[in-house]
Image (tube, rainbow, N blue to C red; front, side):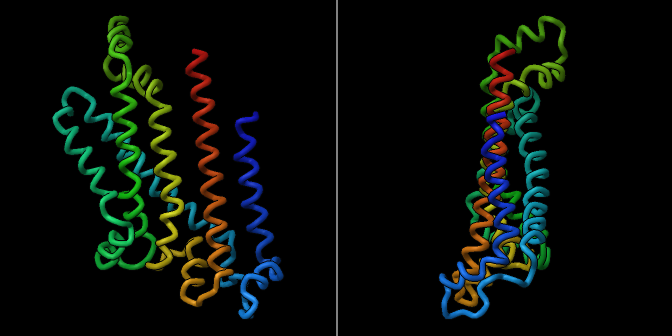
Length: 244
């Protein structure tokens, strides 16, 4: 139960901010004493949070499917020749800044949510592919040989032996990818994808530091909540593997 303490605390702080910031006029007035409107009111914070989580979640599902799938494919006998290519393609996604990806994607995909999802997919692919490869390649060959010796098929070896043993490393890559993308998703506000980046962009445009702080605080608490959830999952997974 203690492993879930930090996720609970960060989630509670996020909920308190969602509910409390609209009523914290005095605090943010102190930050921006010369500005009449210091609380971002264009869209409720809980709506921005839902949109932010949706964008990151969709990108994460696609990226995890592609990254883990590619990692599995190139560690099989028939796909080993493609391992360098997959590694290089995954690395290529992080050589382009997300802003540049958005600039290239908007003329093709238009304004809205789709360009930022594409940017998050490209930016979040490398940690997942890299950790999937590392996790699967680090599985002891003797263990796989023993599994085949007792009659398991290659597919059974993958799902019953390799993936469970590689899961902590793969999960670490997913954790890195998703946590980074929570912050990166704020850039979506520049191309019409409304999310928690809206107050930050509005604050920069209007020279209103109170807006910037509100958006940044929400994103930071969301990232800490998600990161602590992954940390708890990794801890439980390590305990399960050590006990078995």
